Image (tube, rainbow, N blue to C red; front, side):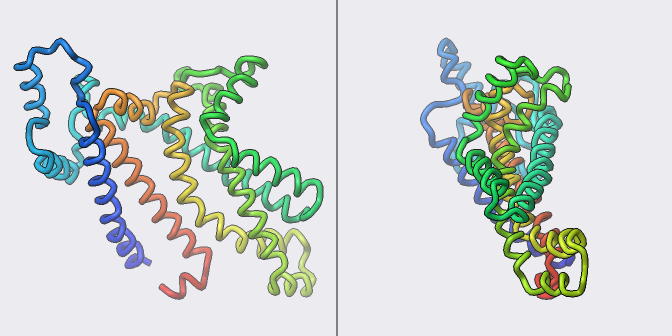
Length: 308
C-alpha cells in the first residue's frame, strides 16, 4: 500500500506542473497588466514597480523564478493587498473555505446515500420518482442560480437566515452557502447510489444472504451498502473538486471571507501571484483528496487491493 501511495503521489507531480504552467502563461499572455488602473503613475515610478515585481523581465524568466519560489512554498507578494504575501492571504481565508467545503461534502455524502438507498428500496414507486425528480432539478440548477433563489426565499421573504455576511463565523450565516454548495452534489450522489444499490440488491451474493435467513436490515447494512458505496467513493474526488471550484462563486455571492473571495479580487485586479497561489493551492488540494479517495476505494474493494 505504501508503494502504491508513493507511485500515485509521484504521478500527480506532472499534473500539478501542467496546471501551474498553463495557468501562468494564460494569465500573463492576456491583455492588460496589474497597474493599468493606476493611470496617473509617472513612467519612472511604473518602471520601478515593474522592476520590483520582476515584471520587466522576459516571460520565460518570470516563469522560472515563479517555479523556483514554489519549490520553497513561496507564492510571492500580493500586488494589490499591501504588506501581505499570497501565503498569508490563503491561510487567512482557508478556515472559512474549509468549513464550508468540508461541511458541504459531508452533507452531500450522508443525504445523497440516504436518498439514493431509499429510492432503490422503493424502486418504481412514488418515493423513487420524487427523489429522482428532485435530484434532476438539483443537478440542472447551477450554484449561481440556486444561491439567489435560496437568498430570496429564506433570507428575504421568510427572514429565517441572513442573506449574506460571515457574522464572525456564526453557524446561522453558514447555512445558505453550505446548502448551496451541497445541493447539486446531494443530487449526483443520490442518483449514483440508487443505480448502484439496485444493481447490488439484484446480485447473487445478496440472494444468497437472504437464502441463509439473514434479516433485511443485516443484508442491507452489512452486505449491500458496502458494495453500493464503491461508485460513490470514486465520485468523491470530482465532487470535492466541484465544491471547491463552486465555492469561488458562492463565497463571493454570500460575502464569505474565504479563499474564493481573494481569487475573484485577484482576477479583477490582475493580481497574478494571488490568482496563481489560489489556483496552485486548489489544484494541490484536489490532487491530495483524489489520492485519499483512491486509497479508501482500495480498502473497500478487495479485488483492487489484491491486484496491488
